Image (tube, one colour):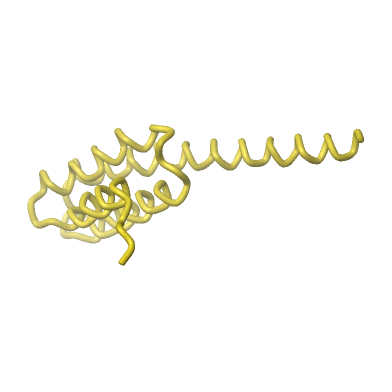
Length: 108
């Protein structure tokens, strides 16, 4: 059986707490994901995992009576924003690399 990389294991554990019954646990999921999402060690698949977790958390919280806990919603929204910013940066750098390759090929 293949070992799960430590970073993936940590993300899985944090993600599993996104629907905890304790409000402070749920809000800290968004808080933690927002604070780590800007680190370059996270790759696109890990950022997508974070986005999936906090988007689901946001939707679930909003569906609750009185739109759920405002702090959980706030930190989920913050995490979504950071992840989107990072994934946009990744897409732009991939586009730049493709353009560089294309211009190199046409100049030869």
